[in-house]
Image (cartoon, rainbow, N blue to C red; front, side, top):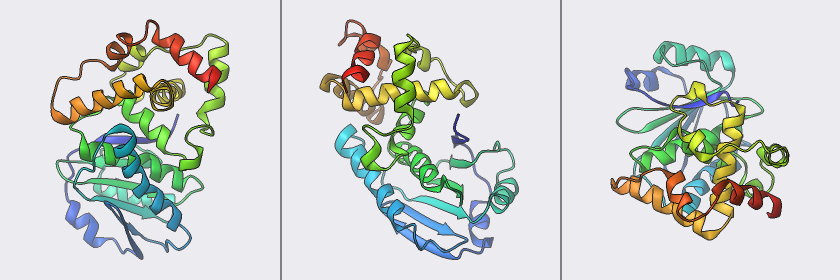
Length: 253
């Protein structure tokens, strides 16, 4: 399971936390304002990818820009990251990367590691979704973040979840969307839940067009404040057996 999370919290002392930290570098990309306590030279590509995620969410899933800035804070090492989080957000659980949001702009906090770019894409996907939508079901929030955490050229065929998904389906280990919809807390999301959430998102994005239409409609209803119902029910009205359609998708994709 990924050591990162989307946390919707009431933030205290935000201005002080921003002002007191000594930031070395500063970048702007789309809605993202990034501050780092180390030089960001050599990381330019990932900022272009973050801005691209917003465009892809709009073009592919009908999720428009949220119209608010998203603040990114990058730390040179784990100790400085954990010290910052412990000081300003003491109730936040220990995670490798964080997305935190109050009633205003969201914050993404990540430290420099070999997973920096993956963590940034993952957490910034959470931020973009919650900037535009009043709520996102936990499983779908994580499934979309898992989908967008890899570089654009790898999203359709090269996500690390792909191989495990294919093998699990060969042995009949298929988790229904209804099962994922029951998960209400991050502690209920294990490795299998993350992989299956990604698989359902991949099916809806790259599978039968009618599946993507249902996902787009579902997200649109959420954005417009209309009761969206359950996404599993919507798919069940379009497919006689959604789980069979999911398996067939990964057999032929």
